[in-house]
Length: 400
Image (tube, rainbow, N blue to C red; front, side, top):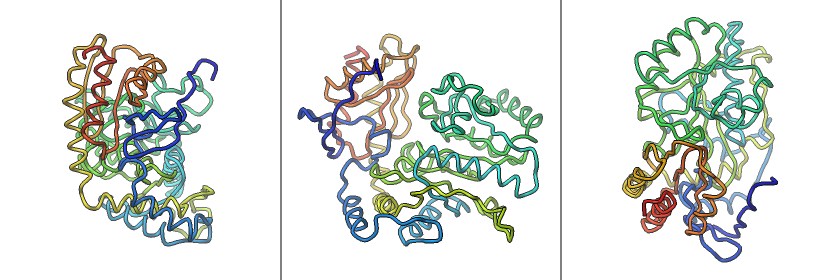
């Protein structure tokens, strides 16, 4: 708080743009941390929100229910592969991951399997800022090293990218699988840990090893879900179905907080019991908030016509072409794209605050993190605004 630059005051949003208090307009290169996938102020989502707020903005979801949540759960189950049919709603991505972790722990307990109290996660991963999720983030490169030792340590491994690392993970699970309830991974690309991609085969390997060693597989699709990587869900690119998937971010099209932990049938059945102690005792106050569910249903309406896929391909091509010259920039070690994600990686951490100010002076909002300058714009961002974003990155990198 003492050293950070004052934040830029935003008074309105429109399409892919942020309107500042001083009248300037910035092209948003991040879609508000990847949430506003359809752009800001989309009339279909806004209309659904107006209608819902006049009818019922919120009721508790304990002992009560409502149509927007039921409809959203059915639609998510229909869109997700296989038997990912059982939806638990919450408010934020971090909480959804905590619920998935709690679900995995109790799954083992309800089945009478003792001792499986830990989780396996991967270097470069990021799963949230709450206490339990901090323990499954990268312990060294992440944002939470200050809290080492506060919570029980989890098992952190390298992703199985080749035969050697696959054998190492197999051996680790053979040695410690008896204490592991589940493994967590961000499919296809690890987001806040550095926008680190991995091939679909990695996910197929994780599925094989999870089955071999009797641990649940959790996909954290909070960043990757809803078209960001080029398929509606990243898991579809690998043809792999996790036992639990977490969703949030773009779920409501960047309007309201909402998240979901969606489980397969066999996970649900471990809680289906005459014994009340077998129930998942978790109840976020605003779980299945009707207003947020209405926004999410409206967002799914927009995904149904398929235009998003063409837009993602268009954005991907623009990012790939516009950022490629940055490869010649000083200190740049890689330039890469995946779906509507464009990344310029440096050999050392970049000065985030200074670069934010330079980007704003060029008429764009880009907020780097760690060693990367990245773009995750709205899928509907016009070509001229995409060009403005990539041009600003080239100028700051020093190749324009």
